Amino acid sequence: MKTNAIDSTRLVPADKLTLPGMGFGYLLGVAFLALEFGEQILDPTSTSTVPTPVGWAIGLAGLGYWLYCVYRFHQALQTVTDGAYPITPLRAALFHFLPLFNIYWLFHWTNTMAQFINARGRAHMGIGWPGFLLLVAIVLKSLDGGLALLMLFAVGAYVSKRLRATLLPYGAS
Image 1 (cartoon, helix red, strand yellow):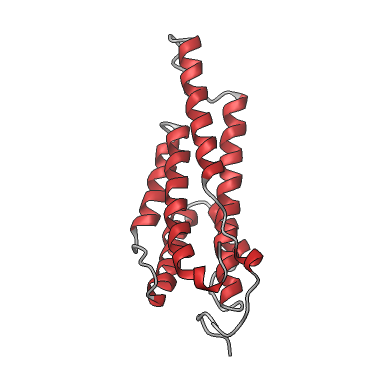
Image 2: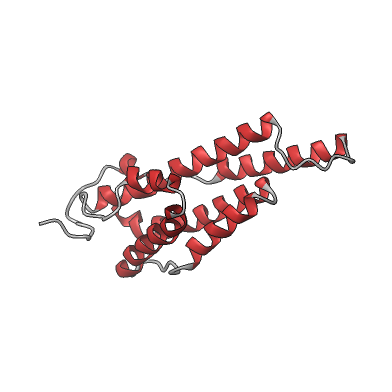
């Protein structure tokens, strides 16, 4: 019978537990901000809020990398629990695309992960607020895509740090 627990007797290869870094996400956020500032400098009278094709590309790259990060977080948890962690990596990433349900999903997966981390006692992850900050990032996207990306990956860095603290003894890097 599988349990939602880490089996410390099981040797887990470290390469399977490598968590994604948030540096690339931060770079995309800064690039988006630089593009916005550059467009404003080139045409200070412009009131257009529609991103340029380059802005769209950076935004889509940010979304893609964020979903990759969410996938990898859950993949590490599936590995250390021998598949018993309740959220599969693919489900974790793809449920972000379901309209309206995606709002609930931001809170569900972060709270489930927080409960897992908090139960281990090695680290503490807040319940509720990581999901709230992800929701704020989505709302912020309509005002400023660069700041939204930076906020998204700041939450990702928080989650990654808590996961590392929890999984480190089991091979995570």
